[in-house]
Length: 413
Image (cartoon, rainbow, N blue to C red):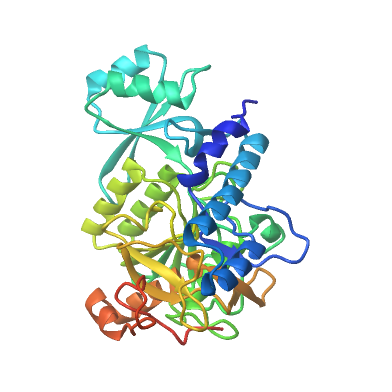
């Protein structure tokens, strides 16, 4: 097993993929899954940012340090599946994704020792070549070589995108029954969705990772905020769901290729609105897939991330084709840990609220992950962005960061 030393992982402090949502843990829980925000940091941030203590930059640094520690832990535990790419970003070990390569370049790559498997992604007319890196090569070395052999091609690592919350807590959960749904369904790219009495609109699930679909706490919570009825009411109650599980039980789950394939599936099924409450780095393959999906009539709604107000852009929310959503608390304040930027389109509740849990009840949640499905649900109901903009309410007077305004302010369970 290979593992990247902590000193390299530490370089992610200001640039790595990050936290965007939180299934609030029980007392005594540890660092948990990559992507979470430690409650103590957030609690202090809420107090200090209202006074004269913790600055936005300092908060971002604290959140980044927590994220870096979790990525270091991921590399230590799963170094046989995960490594850092040429930008210091977590990715699937030994895999490079290629689009737009000439046949002569593909043959040259084979001669150089790369395994090549090509796939046409359904629904978005995208051909992807998946390269297996020669034994003994790091992604850093391999990506440099591939770019020199195929300079005309778009070269990507299979970067990882993280949800937050402990997916292991759903190990004993029952997967929601798969029922064929129509074209009026909302799309969800996340972990698998568990059976829950509030999810009555019908769910069709498909796996895009090893062991998927598999019920997850995060996917179940997000699903309920789109279409829940009963003890958890979503923004589009009873709407059918197409749920793509891009995690399963794969340590390198949540990759750009899996998300791309999931988007293609939803485009092929004529889904109009897709929620992606995941964050990670800019990735050429994912960026291209989102553009192609948009051309097929798919609108992607994504969380801006919980990396802090001074963090670099998180993707896919930062792509111009994506509807970017931030979170607010019960008092209408933007969450202190939420990402900032001109790309923010809307705000929605992301704290002081509950969502469905895998035990059939509801639990507290926090983060921009849980704001995004509320906006997606309202977009599904209203049918277009123009109508959604007209129902947005102004944010706090004199404060920026709300985009076009607040959606679904009363959507708290």
